[in-house]
Length: 139
Ligand SMILES: [Zn+2]
Image (cartoon, rainbow, N blue to C red; front, side, top):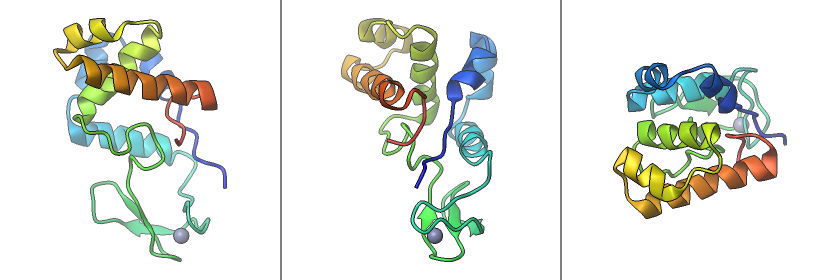
């Protein structure tokens, strides 16, 4: 089954830094934007292909009405099992999209975040772009 295409780069490109920080300022706002981008063409269950859904247990998650499989907002995106707060993860993605060659040490300094964290997440973003030609397409 085709994964949902989410091109966050299109969202990022239209924003300057202050607009970005305002928009992605909390975990909830990040989830809300990710959910609307992820399901912009409607919900399709990854397990059975069903398109009808109800609310899931976690915020903005959707639960397939046919097979009852719940899908979180971050599932099948680069933000899945992300151990850092979403606003920080989005900020790394924003900076890497703006400057793909940016050094992890610069990110680490700018965001006051561990070097390894920046390095690993940057790698994840670039791998995703390389294999899907798209920022947040499913892993
Ligand atoms: Zn299903």
